[in-house]
Length: 448
Image 1 (cartoon, rainbow, N blue to C red):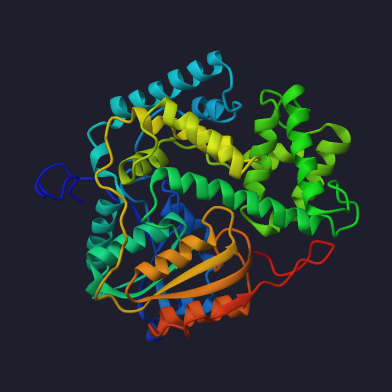
Image 2 (tube, helix red, strand yellow):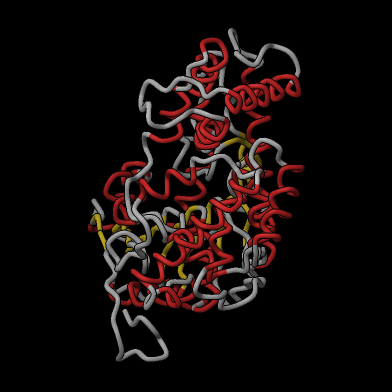
């Protein structure tokens, strides 16, 4: 692809693609292009490892296609510092003292400088608008007259911008776990932190109904208070970590474990056990495993590279401090934890290319937006907003927990309308709602 579409004959970027052919070639509809989110998640790795998460109807009728957007994975990736260097900073407590704040500033300045030194020529061109243009080239290369697409989390943002640029090239599009294009970086971070606070309370409501809940059997407020107590205890004296003694399980380590586990309701029974281990035995090993063992050890930077040019984040240290304080009030367990790593955008060598705006995709056929009411990472109101912005948006509501709906559960009332829409391009009725099957006290139920 052209690095700069204004100069298509100039420097080219390589885009990695993977395709799983349709099983039923006689009934093949076309290609189904996917994006797992991020920004920064590899679509090639995602499809290689997770193709079985798609329903049989889709695997029969479509070539499943994954790609690494520009700057990601195998597609001329943005390179900054190595994962271990960055992980050490991400695992540090949110700064409170002047010395800690100075260390935070020094690190994120160095991180931005390393990105510029190693990938500076590409940084102005890795934003979502250009990635969407790449996706239209991919559509043509796949020999599809119109695009059939399913995107998750950030993949909804990418899909929305594709539809806005190429509305008449859309055949069918599912946007699951929607991000709101109208949000500034500040609004995005506040909503993200609040989403995890909502998810924590939902987990606590589940936990207090189960035998042996380490958060007690009383009210949700009291249970959430015990999480606060654990964070404060770990801040005073880190918990044991038998999996990796080099990583202290202080309050930030505890928060990381809980934060990661809340992405998927399947993790709730394991989170309950890990919290019991931490509260009763002072052992943070279970929380460490939840928070870190499945993280990819890959070049770190695409997340910032895309976000810092897509939308304005707090422009300086004072603005970040102010936002961290505000986030801490609306999301006391996650606010500062979520905000501080975005100090790097204040020092980013490329400024945002545009201001946030509504995305209408005028002229596109019906686009299906899927929102989960207690989604921790992309709050339900973002899905409502995106469906309202799109002139042809149709909202499918999943009353439940977990980040995104289609891939992470087997609820018939989600799987069937999504799959039928992708196959036929006819959307479900407006206002359709799907109720999640509750987990029973033993932790069983339809996963989400």
